Image (tube, rainbow, N blue to C red):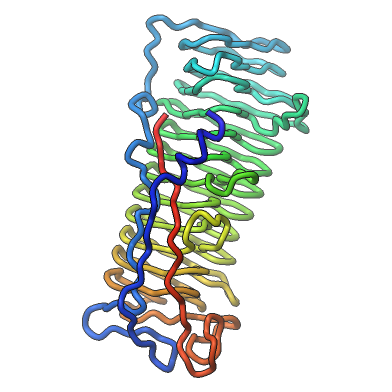
Length: 415
């Protein structure tokens, strides 16, 4: 439920310790001979406990319809679901909303079966209350809001699917969403575990206050703002994004993926074309195939949450970052940088910009077509660290990134 007790989100303490300091060459380049060694080492964090992120029901792609109720949408008529159950929705309609207003202990499953809803100013699906709502697709489904959204009292219902509670999108069918604002907006936890989803919108395609988690599915996004956006402006201990699988093809005018706390990627195939590729306070990539094309930072870590230590960790996966011309960074961390595994291919003028500790122990690094065993810390104006650049206190001294503070990290949790 909403907020889900903020203490749960900061339940696990991550102690980020300082290992033995290495040396930095006068060119500002950390160099390893033969095999990669650690310089200003930062231990790999346990950023997010996602062991219970998805429930069995989240991952089921077909609903048990043996006791289901069938509902048919019609022009100008809303459908209200007021109790727990499975509801098969069919038909085509204009200016009709499927409203869920059930007790906060009830789980509701909406099975969209070849549904088309086109509204002028209200969501096609509006979850006002429930414990959790599953939106499961079969066949071909299209939900559209073509005009300016109207608020529901004090609630700014600015998405085609708007939910005040947890929602899971799954199924075996297709869902096409067209919006003049947000695509899917969830004030709690949003999960995607299946189906084929296409979103075309002017604001955030998938947004949630607490978290966005993707286990599977095929998601295509074209947006004038962010692709995935997790943030709650009243609580900086929430707002994480977890990707365990699936295929995401995101074209975004702003950030492809943006989280207040942690972005954790354990798998999947991601194709990101955006102003900025991935942004969070802590970005941790453990696996997956990720292709980023960006005109600002490719992967960026900045202090959006005081509950999380700022850093970027690449522990696995196959990552390619293609950057635009100019003073833009492929990998930019306002904290520590860990390169511990996987393959990182960068095509850019400015490669790395980090303010804290560097650990370079296992990542295969390919820069502009050539494999290298050195990391050059680019500073403002594209210069290398080591001679008074950003993060250096004294000219002629290497940048000093002190020991990162101890901090408590949000914990993933199933619903």
